[in-house]
Length: 438
Image 1 (cartoon, rainbow, N blue to C red):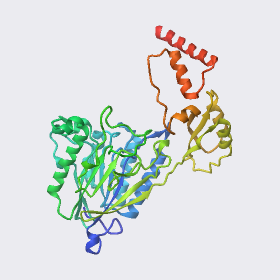
Image 2: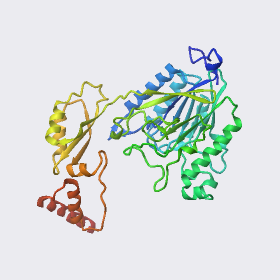
Image 3: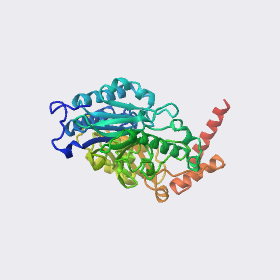
Image 4: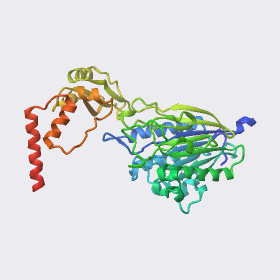
């Protein structure tokens, strides 16, 4: 697709080197429609999409790669869908020659995402939601990416999130020892081999090969609070070796932390543009600008994404309630824009249960420009035995309910529950038995 001049797009470079250059923007895991602890995030997502349109217009890349999880739910709201398609329309209007490639993630509905693919193709937008393992053509996920002068700069293996039923029959059937031991990763590897063969049959020597994927690459750092396992009860992680050395760049989605895979510059997660849980409070959210020169990767540049709504954890480590209340009362939350007040997690160190904990915190924060979304109590016993941000595991045994309650209390607080608390627990048990017998 040819790109216009400076009034509506970019012009081709003036020398042989720049004419062989191709620039891509890599992003993923938008999760449009997500609510944060019951708070609607439409305004935050709108800020990000506005910023991305401005970034595209300022940097004029040749292609935008969106590596899955566009939506937070398989059945997104009308508002979330309007945000997505409005963004595509604005990106196309502002950068008429921009190639846009969208793949489905595990949160997306493949069919819903692909439904308008025929209309979007007229704007240079390719949407790939699912691969057919039986009747599909290996080239169905192959996308040609063009430079400013319309010449082919790269071939993109746009592989969406693969469910077990999407895998090639020969890999999923367990015919080899490797696929029998781990059929899901083996099927993903077979898919990329098929796509690579189709791309190599089409490419010219000076054209790059790149790949997209939405998967869990082995060794990648996860966000435990916000990433959904891909294959429940099975080995889901794939080795970086599935991405052949002929691939100059691999644009991945699913893991929310921006990172290299296996230390390789060419295999990257862009990460989510907005924090999706408090485990991501210190993540450097970003999109990536990738520069290719002919078939080779030249550079990957990090472009930080502004965070419209701050995430605050106060205090940084759990403290006794009296100290926490004093800290909250003195903290300066600034003057945030209405609708973008910080999300606040309060971390409290308890010696025993505090029935009035939330009320005490809410009273201190009343009228302050902040949104209390989470209270994280900890005890000295749990802190001594459990890493920060983790929940102590409870081993379930066939104990009597009273014994189980006492054991759990000892694990949590390092002491025996009071007689009054045990009496309340017994009342709850009796009420539950009456309701079961009703």
